[in-house]
Image 1 (cartoon, rainbow, N blue to C red):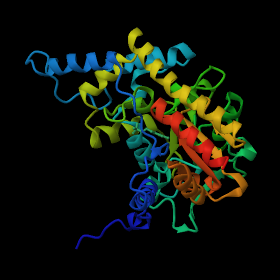
Image 2 (cartoon, rainbow, N blue to C red):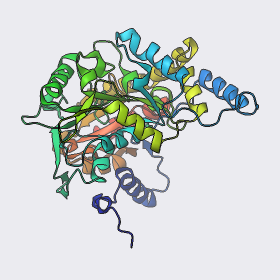
Image 3 (cartoon, rainbow, N blue to C red):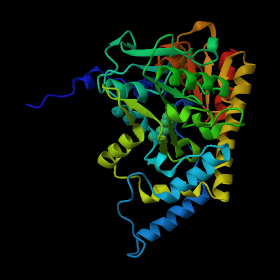
Image 4 (cartoon, rainbow, N blue to C red):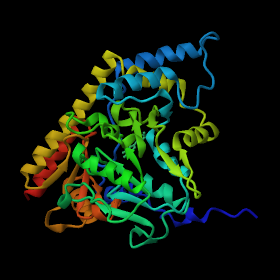
Amino acid sequence: MALINEHFLKLPNNYLFADIAKKVNAFKATHAKADIISLGIGDVTQPLCPAVIETLHKATDEMAQQATFRGYGPEQGYDFLREAILKNDFLPRGIHLDISEIFINDGAKSDTGNIQELVRWDNSIAVGDPIYPVYIDSNVMIGRAGVQEGGRWSNVIYMPCTAENNFIPQIPDRRVDIIYLCYPNNPTGTVISKEELRKWVSYALKNDALIFYDAAYEAYIQNDSVPHSIYEIRGARKCAIEFHSYSKTAGFTGIRCGYTIVPKEVTASTLKGERIPLNHLWNRRQCTKFNGTSYLSQRAAEAIYTPEGKKQVKATIDFYMKNAHEMKRALTSLGLKVYGGEHAPYLWVKTPHETPSWQFFEEMLYGAHVVCTPGVGFGPSGEGYIRLTAFGQQEKTQEALHRIENWLSR
Ligand SMILES: *Cc1c(COP(=O)(O)O)cnc(C)c1O
């Protein structure tokens, strides 16, 4: 008899976006003619840029010829892309990485979920709250998160990120083994300053902790006073692993490509106290469980580092950020407290009069026919907030803002 991994059974079945879809469908059943605008789901809408499309066509043609056909590539990714990453994403910021510290992935979700395999099941973990659900759920599956009680996992240290602390968690008052941070943040759209990030690196070094740093929205940062990478902080290469993704940067949610940085100096201990480099373990793990990101995806990613590619990718990000600024301006002028949206495509809005997230979601759906994401779906500290995304079409976003305006001033 095969026994299952019962940790999976602890995961609640209801998935946030499925719950939202259910409520939207219930609304549609009684309002057949209503034209609903979604500012809810965090997927991009703009097509791939011309530089990427051109490269994809070219790479496809290479696959059609015996002489240029490619089969399995290196598990760590092709050097042409790893070199482009070194040269464009890190060297200009004074960060010197070795090519062997870069692992090309098929999007950051896989690696942010898988990285926890490298450490024992009984390490303690701390997460910012609200949070991208992958970090906790991947720890639940291996039994590290404990059991769920009242919307919280018993072995997870929740670090509240609210307006009161400017969405920067407080440094834990005890030792923690592993810390997940995500900046610019999904869902709150807020950022961390170098000064604040320095405190985290120094905590990790002092306490021999690891930081798993998700930089999926780094490309949305509008000026260099905000850190694009944790390695801008001295000492981070001894304690941090960083995740990048081309999904939000260049509309790769369907293409699938990103990368993970595992510096050679990052180590963790055996029970006997021997220090083991995680770069070596991750490489071993990837060679066993991952057979590389597709050649086409990697060529497509390389194309965004060409001068045309850079310009085109920036134009799309500017397009989304224009939405974000419009949204922030309009919602603020309605008297709402709006956070984020300056270095990220997300706005985090405080519901008026302490209205619970799900109640506000329904009121806005029925009152304005606009869909948002209830903040509490991202963690207990998200209660009393909603998330809006700037990934929509411009006209639809404008229309949604008009409707919210009419609804709130009724
Ligand atoms: C979208 C997103 C990712 C990246 O997902 P991909 O697998 O690269 O598409 C990673 N982290 C966060 C917080 C995200 O919102």
